[in-house]
Length: 179
Image (cartoon, rainbow, N blue to C red; front, side, top):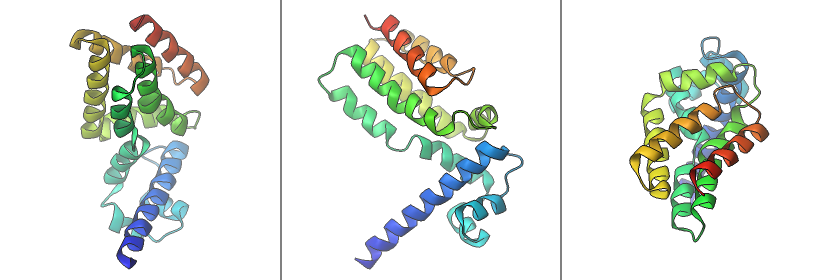
């Protein structure tokens, strides 16, 4: 039982660190955020932070995955549900775009964060693209249409809209792709 509590404690600590890091990166930007800043925000020592993440790049990569945590598994479940194609596509967009967007929108360095994700997290970005394409192709039926849908989804957030506006855009896009 103690081992299970230690694992849960480690997971809770990691979540606290990722929340603190996300806050720092969105407030101050990647280049001006230090591991010291994150440690202070998470209320822990720098050595403990380095036990969980080897450097700032590793920490940033962890944030990208953290913002999407559970989204891919939930999206897989949506694909097997008895919903219309339109409902499935919108629900998946909620999981992989709208919900993560609410974690980063409207902060001082949101634009920088958005750009830095693709530069510093190429593996995570590639995984994200593959997953979105897979879900879209499953629903829309062919690779080319899925690719156009993915590019359109990416473009919807380019001007860093508020969540409410992004949701409306996604609804409109999904409506146009699935009639």
